[in-house]
Structure formats: structure tokens, C-alpha cells
Image 1 (tube, one colour):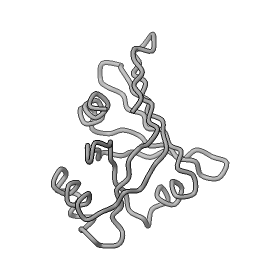
Image 2 (spheres, one colour; image 1 turned 60 degrees about the vertical axis):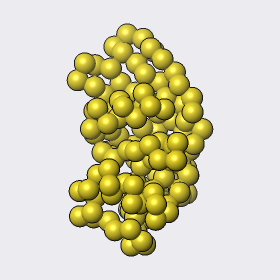
Image 3 (cartoon, rainbow, N blue to C red; image 1 turned 180 degrees about the horizontal axis):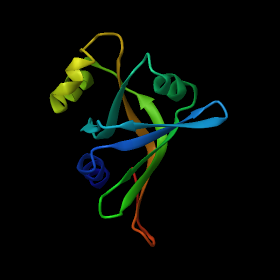
Image 4 (tube, helix red, strand yellow; image 1 turned 135 degrees about the vertical axis):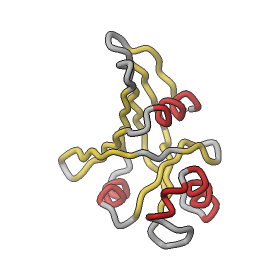
Length: 131
């Protein structure tokens, strides 16, 4: 998990894909943290991404490095919003305070369960990690 966290934080913007009815939906994300030994992300419960993940928790995250390596992370989303997880997120990325507040009824924390990460380079699969 730590290698996945490092890749995502080193490459700043990554993309989260959800299922939207019969279609995929993809959007950029930029926040990730390790919390309670889980790889956690955040969103607002007023957003389509939240509604899509509640309807179908399967997701995929993809990120690419400037060197041409990339990561694909598959799993199921589990929402785990607590005051403590919200505080941890705001401490890690203070700019989120411009959007969310602890206990605001909108700010949601989730992690990827049954996660399988695959690292690639331009020619081959280089490594698979399950957590």
C-alpha cells in the first residue's frame, strides 16, 4: 500500500473512474492519505462521484508518471467518514478547508477495499500488489 500511496502523491493528479449507469465516468482527484492502515480519499456527498460510488462501489484509479510509468488500482469503495478521518485529511491537505469542514454534513472519506494495484512501464506489467 505504501508504494501505491507514494506513486499517487508523487504524481499529484490521478483519475478515478466510476460506473454511471451503463457508462464509465472519469474525473481528476488530487488527495490521498494513509489513515487507519487504509488508502483513503475524499469527496463531497453532493457530487455525482459520491452518488455513483454509493450506487456501485466498484472503481478504478489510474495515474501516470513523467517517466512513462503508470498505476492502475481497482477495488470497492467503503465510506468511512468520522470526525477523526476528516481532521486527518484537513491536516494533510489544508487547502481542503476552503471546501470542507469537519462535521459539515458534506465532507466524506472513503477507502478502497479489495484493492489490487498494478504498476506498468511502457512495455510490461512490472508489479501487482493486493491489499
